[in-house]
Amino acid sequence: TGKVKDRTDVKVLSPVNSGELVLSEEYFTKQVFSESISKYIVVKPLHFAYNPARVNIGSSGIAGIVGAASVILGNGTIAATADFAINGSKAVNLIGTSTGTTFDTAGHTITVNTGIAGAGNLIKTGTGVLSLTGSGAEFSGNISVTEGTLALNATSKDIFAAASSVTIGNATLDLSAI
Image (cartoon, rainbow, N blue to C red; front, side):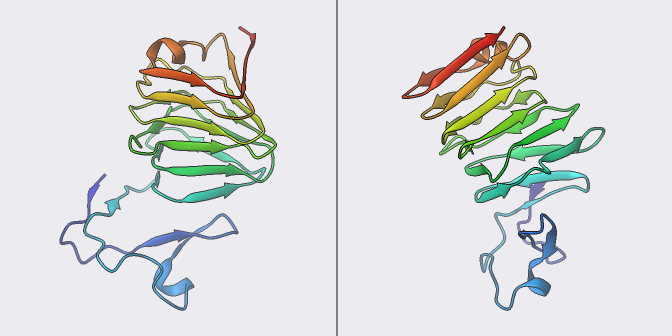
């Protein structure tokens, strides 16, 4: 992963409602990305990067974070349109430190069955539940829960010790599975 800088061989992909990534120039009738892509990030095959936008995810969730694959999230929102899970054997890496990565549960349950890593901020909004079931030992960002419920279990509870700060607003911290 690196910056595009002056490369001319890079094509921009955009997520669409079907859940696919498509070539922006072929899908849209106008250019939907910045005129200058010099600060865009080149993502290696089998890697997934998301920064900054709002991605609405339904029941299919995110799966297959194994081997060389990785998920990097930063300065945007992952929003639930149905209950879904993030599954895999590798941690989700949070890199967004300016606004962080927001998990908007919107009355649904998002279950993160992987670890959480990185120095980015984790923000939980929306009614509903964000359930963390993997290790948080490699996470060093801030945690802010403004609505709904953040649920931890015996494996994920280490995220509190690793986090720089934890703020629980008008929300619920569910520790019943510890």
